[in-house]
Image (cartoon, rainbow, N blue to C red):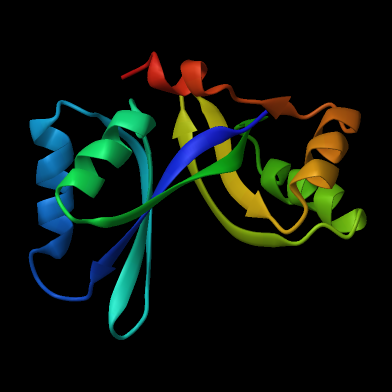
Length: 142
């Protein structure tokens, strides 16, 4: 089970992130989690939001370079070492994590990540008994 994530390519200059956030605000779309990875010239802003398909359309219509992709979201107990254990399960199976970000929600740790082998990751997560988060479980809280 995966959730939808926006990847937004923005120039590394003042005001570009604000433009994206204002577009989502004006559309009444709530952010759940976000992360920015940057290079010298641009950044990639990854967003989990209340209405990813509509957010994608809003941003595209405004001329923003955006992609919609599927990522994994798993829920962990908020205890030291739980993230390491979860990632260890994937690593043991040779599954590479291409990027990851995390946050707390209702006292639980949430890991959002993409892998180099989605099908193998899905199977490994199920076999390990890790708890997937469904998109509806994230978006109904906003």
